Every structure is written in structure tokens, then in C-alpha cells.
Image (cartoon, rainbow, N blue to C red; front, side, top):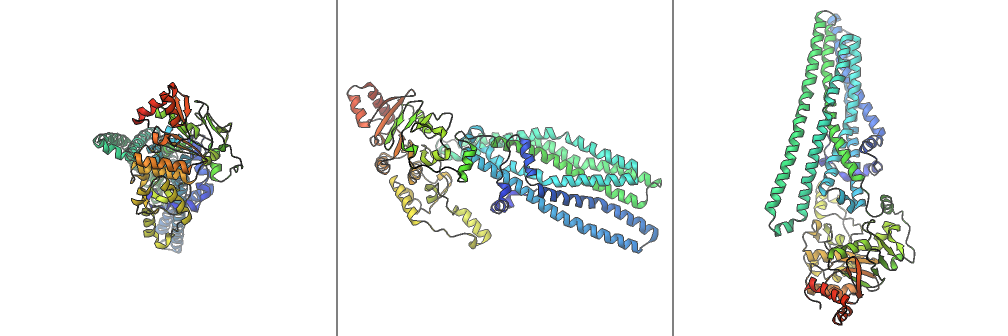
Length: 630
């Protein structure tokens, strides 16, 4: 089979984007496998024709040798022998050419199938967003992208060989029927019976492969989750417990793999035993017929060659049985990912947004008006900074996600009186930005991490160095930063008091941030994420606990600069910090799913001292969360 580790993915993708980018059907797993074949119909036809010619010539070669042997025994080394030798040379040349060409097309089919499934799964995961992780684990998605895509590619790759083997089998059967009817019938009936018996192993093999695939997905998920929380794991001394859980799951994978290997070993053994027994039986019958004078020496020699050649079709059939089981499991896993729909907007909307096929915003945007949450009745006035406070931080975070339309089932929100779910999701994302308390950050240059919406023609340093090593320095395009844009990025980072982030990266936006920004502290990650939110100045910015991981002095500076930078724009904070609340224009207390009281921080504290019970509740909430109301 072809090997993923020796493929230049960029070359593969750009060589045939039409096929790689073509969407896969999501009706059922069988439709996915069918589409892999129909989408490369012309290449599959070429491969089948090439392999059929190769296999048929391989089947005819023993016959020609038998004719040459009989001619030589009867007449000696006459010109007829040299003519037959010439035909043999021509057949060998044609067979070698068709074999080479067929193999090349098969590799192309494998690449197209595997890369197309990888591309479609990647694209669907990015378009579906959080909906994927609600239905599938990270490890399962990773395994689907790599191993399952490889398996479906393997099946498509061996299909031309299977069809060629069937053609060769038919040729052998016809020749044997012409030479001796009984032997021809033995081959014509025996091979299909053997194949049908071998096919009975498909279902138990599939079930064992499915079980092993599920256990492998759990192991991958455990590994990825652990890497994501490695700092916390080390902080609480949980390495031993993780090692125990990982070893336990690894043993489950091993045991499941043993079950697959046990049945697979039987199949591998039968690949040798069954053709061998069948060959011995046919040769025994042929020897008896030759001794009785019913077959010539040349015909017996041809029979030996034909029978030996039958081993190849049988082995290919057994191999296809194995690949079919793995591919069927893989297609089902791919289908399970592709059938997941986004929890906000539709796939069609997101695809249209990627192609730029979206309506332009009008001069008067609805996002310049108020946001109203239908569940709590909270109204976010435009152009000011509003803070949401709750005794249960999860409730205020859920309100923030509703306002940002993360989940259409929950987003009972209107903007300027319009149901936010009726607006194109791309327009919502362009105008409303949500930053969570634990934001996700990518690795790479700091400028690319902050300026996430803007594509940069530069890769991580290890990738750049690897490409330069393989293809030479000329293959790496020099990167020329946009100085004006860099000034904007530095300004946003300054607003979040991120000077120490720059200092830790050689005082340069070109400094490398590791995967998920693990090279930064929790407070630094929060400030980089906040800078990322400020760069594009969205109409509505929603921040969930944006300063929970920084010290009070840093928080005070961030609060002041955030207020200045977002002046005149709608900003929503969920926080219990008095330093942030004091900078907000309005503070809203939400309790029991309803708005309780509203006002400025200082006004609410004054009302609490005056005996206002709702304001006193507000004072109690922030006092409990921070230890002080001042």
C-alpha cells in the first residue's frame, strides 16, 4: 500500500484540487465509498484496463510456453520456436509496461481518495466547530483523519488489481475448458466456492476491527487530553494516575489488536493453504490425464503455469477481503463525522462565506443597535461597556455565549429587534466576537497569533527549516512584515499590558509561540487573546472573565485601557472584579435566570448602603467572589 509518510501533501492537493475539494455525500457510508469510485471514473478505467491486460497476458504466458514446448519436442529448434520466442518477448514487454502504468494510476487513485477524505474531514471539522466535540472525541477525529482515510484509499487502490485478477481467472478457465472440460469446470467452480468461503470471514473481521478502532480512538483521546492539561496534571501530581490510565487503555487496544491479529493470521494462512491445496489437486488431476495421454507435455506444462498463476488472483481476493473490512469501518467513521451539523448557522452558509459569496453589510448595521437576551430579559445598550455579574459564573458565561450566537438552540437573542438567528452566520461572526476565559491560541509567530483573522504567508520555524532542508533555501519565500500592521498589533498588545509577552519572545512579533501558547503563562495567554480581540475592533466585543489570571495592578491598567480603546463601541464583560466593574458604564446583576438590578458599580454600592435589597444582593455577590466591594 502507499505510505502517508512519503507524500508531499502540498503537491498532492494542488495537483488535483477539483477532486480533493469535491464534497462527499452524507446519505450513508456506502454512498461515500461509491463516490470515491465515481469521482475518479476515468482514472479507475485506465487502471482497470492496464491491470486486466497485465493479468491476462500473465495467464497467456504459460499457454505460449506450452505451445513452444510441444513444437520443440515435435520439430526441434525450427523457425516456429523463434517466432514463439518473439511473441513471448512482446508479451513480456507489454506486461511490464501495463504493470508500471497501472501501478502509477493506482497510486494516484490512493492519493486522491485519501487526500480527499482528509480534506473533507478537515473542512467539515472547521465548519462545524464545537458541534464536533459534542459528538466525537478529539482522538476519534484525529484517527478518522489519518488511519481511516488511509484504509479507504487502500481499497480503491487494490480494486483494479481485483478486477484484473477476475479477468485473468476467466481467461484461465476458458483455456482449461478448451483443453479439458473436466479440469476447466474444476477451476470454474472451485475458485468461486473458495472465494465465497473466504468472504465469510469478512463480518467477524469487521467487528473486531471496529472494536480495535474504537479502543484506539479512546487511547488517542486520552493522550491528546492529557497533553492539553499537562501543566495542571503536573501541578496536582497526577502523572502516576495518568500513566496507570494510559497503560490500562493501551492494554485494551493491545487485546483488541490481538483479536484482529488472530483472525487476520488465519486469513493470511489461508492465502497460502487454500491456493496451495487447490493447485496440488489440479496438478494431480493434470498428471493423471497426461499419463493417460489426454494431455500433451506442453499442455501439462501450461496447466502447471496456469494453476500456479491462479494463486495470485486468490491471494488478491483474500487481500481485498481484509482491505474491504478496514475500509468499511473507515467509511463509517468518516460518515459519522460528516453527518454532524453546526450548532449555529448551516454548512451552506459557512461554505458560501469561505467563497466570499455573502451579502455586503449595509451602511446602517443592525449590530449598531441593542442586544436583548430573551431568556433573562437583559438588554445590552449600544456604544457602552456593560458588565454582567452573577453568583454563578457559569450563568453569566452562558449568557455571553447566547449573545454571541454560539448555539442556535440557545440563542434566543435579538439585535435591533431582529432575531439574531435569521442573520447570516458569517455576518454575525464578523460583527460579534466572543473571547472565553480560557481562550484557544495557535502556535506560530506572535504576529500571526494576535492577527488570527489575517492569513500570513509564513509557517512555524520548524516547518520552514524542514522545507529549506528538503527543497533548498530557494523554496522558502522571505517574509516581509507589514510595518503599519505591526504597529497596530503592538498597540493592541500594549492595551492589554503585554510588554512582558514581547520580552519573553526576544521583543519581536516574529517570536515563536509554541502550540496552544504553552510557552506563555496563563495571564500572558489571556492578554494575548484580549489583544487578538481588540485588533479588528468588532462592533460588539464579548469578554468572559478576561482578567481572571492576572494580578490586580495589571488588571487595573487593562481595565482603564480597555475602556479607552472601546469607547463608543458595544462591549460586554462577564466578571466579578471590582476593578473591571468600576470602569463599566453599566453593571447588570443576573440571578435565577432574570435581571435583578442595573446601574453603575458606584451607584449600586451607594444604593446598597441606602438599603436597596437588590443592590445589597449585588454587593454580597461581588464581596463573596473577590473578598472586597471596593
